[in-house]
Structures are given as structure tokens and as C-alpha cells.
Length: 220
Image (cartoon, rainbow, N blue to C red; front, side, top):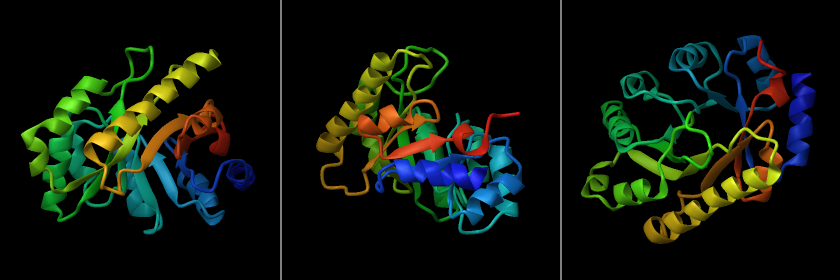
């Protein structure tokens, strides 16, 4: 069913929306089924699982780190990761820069914002991110490339609340784009929307969605 699920989702989303197949906890056979159907962008949320899969699976896969990333784990994924979604504090950005420098890479990252009404989710608030981007330290981060923003909506059936939270993130993107990244074409990603709410996210401006269960089925 994986091939059919992928085809269905891709037929329903605009061409400019990147589909990240969330493959956490899934066996390599499932990923290969998606790979053979043309999928190349996969998202993992655990460093150990991500590094193991990256070693065992085809080299042209783009690996996205979508989970909460601890600073002491950055070194394991720095040599190969394509995009880190969840930069939620300056300390982590600094560490990514440090580890990227060691392996002579520039690593693409997204700034994660806390837009949900849930304390369990991580992320900057607007003022924290603004303060960081205005700081002198930003001039030292030559090995990170901030590509855009990421956020997760509240897990709720209230569609209006989800729309509002995604709209907030889109607004943050527009403000930061105009203030800090006006002449940087690389700052162009709004990563929001998962299996349960990606249709709403796309309506509110998302151009990158993270979909797991609708591709691979429910987690075991």
C-alpha cells in the first residue's frame, strides 16, 4: 500500500510542496518500497535510528532530522544530514555550526517556533528568535544556513485553532524574511503540517509537510 499511499498524497498536494516521508520506527523494507516509488526525502526523529538507516540505505536519500535534537547528538548526523527541522535554541544552532565546521559542511536548518497550546512542544517564541537573529553571535555561524521556519500545531479537532496557529507561523516567516533574510533566496521554507493536518497547513502557506502514518500506516 505504501506506493499507492504516496501516489495519492502527491496527486493531492501542489507541486511546490515538499513531502517528507516520516519513516521513524519503520523497517528498511518499508523505506525501500517508498524509495522505489520515487520518494527521496525521509524524516527521522531519533539520531541512532537515523545514522543506522543512512548507512544501510541508498546514498541519494535526503535525510531530515525532524525530532527534538540534543546538542550532544549533533556530531553523529553532521556528516550527512540534509536538513535539521528543530532548531529551538541558540545553543543548538551554535553546536550545529561547530560540528558542521569539523566536517567541512554547511548544514541547512529551520528555526522551530512554539505555536501550539501545548507545553510538551519545543520552540522559540517570536522575541527569542528576533533577539538571536539580531545578536553579534550570528556573524560567527558560517557553517549553518537558516532555510526557514518550522512549527507543530496543537493536537486538537478544533480546525480554527489549527488554522490560527499555522497562520501565526506563516506570519513569523514573513516578518523574519523581510527583516533578516530579504536578499537571501535560501530562506524559503515553511515546514508545517503532518498526517492529520497537512491539508490545513498547505492552505495556510506550508511548502513542506511531514507525513508518516498516511504513507506507512499506523505506528506499531
